[in-house]
Image (cartoon, rainbow, N blue to C red; front, side):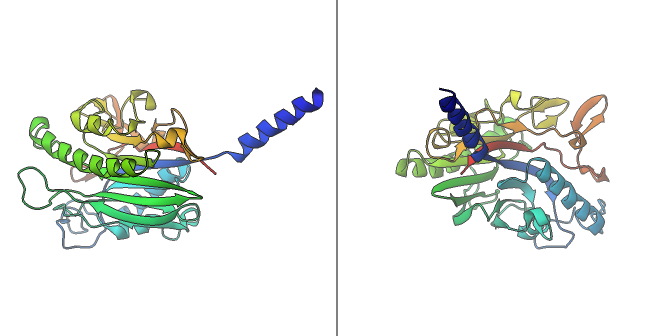
Length: 317
């Protein structure tokens, strides 16, 4: 009996030891532009601009992003919003020991400012099988003018994982006026998601990004018909990833498919959705705690971003 008990404990201990977890994250890094005058409308972020976006500040911003990624456990996949091009993403990982084997997935969008989304991935663990973009035309437009959705299909041992990185249209023109634009983005993402699920109901899919909408809004709710939301108020100390006029709100999201809950060895860790509020990502402004951003208008603050990063944990074989 004692031998059986000891054997059982050893099996359980070995199982727990053998199970590893990795982070998957999304971070809107707030206007990560290079210092070179490009073909896009990047005049706001140049050394000669009012913002004085010089190499020293650019390098400091890259260091900040690396610090955040390291504290999140060096994610196996990290999605980014508000990046100018592939090079700035490569600059995040270049000459960095912990990122030496990371690949980059990026496509140039038709956004007027040249703002794109992208992702990095640990190529020692993940094999990139396919990647692409989902391009859509907003209501009232005749050509694409918005940020694309970038997707990638990875292989982890014998299992495939789809990751979609989003940055949906802003609310700048007003919530009601801009809502159809975000619905168009959501519909475009859902068509892709449902096509994958039709082929394999247990497909492992992760959608993440700055959706510029709250969990209860129509566009995220459309995604929630196919995927489960992982970022809720309880995911963070302040109940949100972004502070607008003194109010914390969730606009940075991660959704996962049922296949990540009940199929295979690669699985979501329950309740692992997190809004990461590391102390250095925050500052006090007019008596309130808010994200420590890089700029306030053209005034350089030297902070990290106006968004907090969000993440989940998955088990990996």
